[in-house]
Image 1 (tube, rainbow, N blue to C red):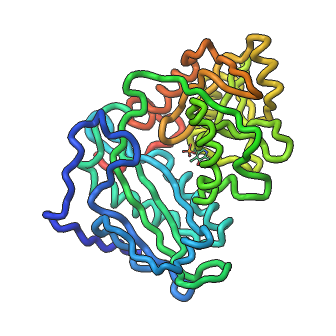
Image 2: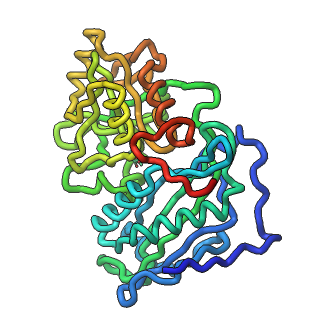
Image 3: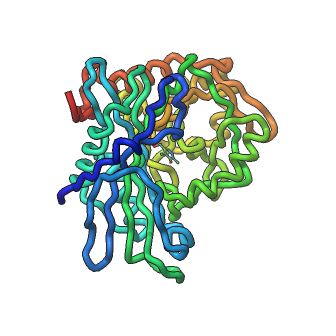
Amino acid sequence: MEIKVNPAAPESRKAKPSDEAKLGFGKFFTDHMFTMTYSAKTGWDYAEIGPYRPLCLDPTAMCLHYGQEIFEGMKAYRGKSGEIYLFRPQENIRRMNNSATRLCMPTVDPEVFQEAVTELVLLEKDWIPHGRGTSLYIRPTMIATEAALGVHPSSEYLFFIIVGPVGAYYQEGFNPTKIYVSEEYVRSVRGGTGNCKNAGNYAASLYASQIAMGMGYTQVLWLDAIEKKYVEEVGTSNIFFLIGDELVTPPLEGTILPGVTRDSVIQIARHLGRTVSERRISMDEILRAVEAGTLREVFASGTAAVVSPVGQFYYQGKEHLVNDGKTGALTKQLYEEILSIQCGEQEDPFGWRIKISD
Ligand SMILES: *Cc1c(COP(=O)(O)O)cnc(C)c1O
């Protein structure tokens, strides 16, 4: 499929943010976006990179009523000599297509998808910030656009990709977060959509997050919906526990998001000679490890921060410290390893990096 390019008029282009230290996350978007439309009759068509602009939707557009909306989050990184990399893009593409299938939405040809990401990033390459740990965030999204009420899969869709510069997560070094274990509200249940990046999951998570934040915590630690016993994930990240010499993360049983960072952490940790287990881990086991002094590190993993140390958690009315509230050595090491592969500073033994420009 050919991607038509319709450049934004020079006078409509935005000023690029001048201070990389103030980029933050999700605040700036570039001058162009990729769009492609689907109809049940003709399939995907009209692939185009055009000016970044508001969408025009009928008030009955089905995404607004029944939640057929899925998205992805990935990044493009700038290397030391200006070269540009994507990190495991096919993993995000495969995951988006899995989300699409689960939500009765059409899949996108993986090659067309990667081509669209690449062309858009290259067109906007001057927007990619330079500082270590900064990147161009890429947000592919699909929404149901058929104008009709009545619960059924939409016959029309819009797929779009927007990109924007994001800052380094750790400007003043790691700051371990405080997390709140939610015993009342759950994020997902087996058989549900917890392993998809669909909008509804995030809407459903807000209430518990608000409670956690009101109590001074940054994130919610989700437990399994049935026994409220096993750890699932934290906020919108996967979670890891270093207990003794075993690095433990919950298994992929349909209720948690199969994070690309999660998989990268597992592979790198094993490469570094660590024992990694994907197995169920209960709050009881974690409390026992705290008592025994064997809970050494806890961290979350996700595209936004790579890894994010947890310094404290709140469960059943009590606060528990992890590693005296400090960032652990393995957490730091994994962050460095992954970031330096992403931005081309070291060998890429796994073949994860894709160079899209010299
Ligand atoms: C996106 C996301 C993750 C992390 O996935 P990555 O591919 O590592 O960015 C974890 N949990 C949830 C709920 C998410 O939405």
